[in-house]
Length: 345
Image (cartoon, rainbow, N blue to C red; front, side, top):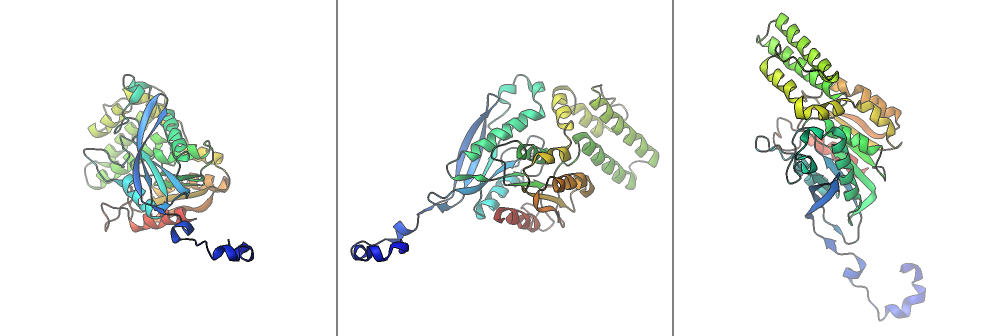
């Protein structure tokens, strides 16, 4: 308007611009139920739109849960209710980032959908396709900027990060950034075996096993992993009952999912990312589920893929649920700081 001041001096004597006309009105924050379809199943989720100016297009993030029956809020009711995804949506909203989180297969309002009568056919690629449909739904929301989309995986197991990497290399438009929080960075069964070995070693230190028993149990774990990969029945006679039950759960109706998840080596997925994609990869020093050295190959692959951003960030005192001793039920300050960086750059 001021560029044409000389031409409209007379008009300004009779025409005034009110503050409401000069500045778009503020639209209050809102949570909105969203539904989208993948493979014939309707998935339900929550779109959180932060306060913004009318007509403004916002950065937006798809929030992906990790493994297990984790719902849109990051919970596995009734036993575990940390609300991690809901807290993350609130945190990002304060940075002006809209978020979509959803009930994946087997959880919340979504349930098993078309797999209800054939759960044995549900495999890992089905979860990737569901996440892709969620990304497209977020992209098409009227408040979001389709060229400023982010993908974030959070807690509970780790395969949500792997899903984020797979999406980052295939969806259109490519995401501007990825947040891989405490990610699965090696094959699924390798990580399970590593976790079990650590637990067995700790039990041995506490006198629950002798060193000879420790070697026997470790050998049984390795044999179980080999059997699963070769599609043979697992011998559950040797391992302690909790470990035996775990490997029993990896068979039967869950076998197809386990095999298809284990077939993916996360560092290989990094090479499909668009060069320049901002990537945050976190590791908490109290995370007993994801040892830091398991992320080495993925960190190297991201560097070779010319990803930008902070890369791997160590979170002092943070556990796998992104808590610390002073914040046992909320996101720890180092987590908030790292997410704030990604939201603002």
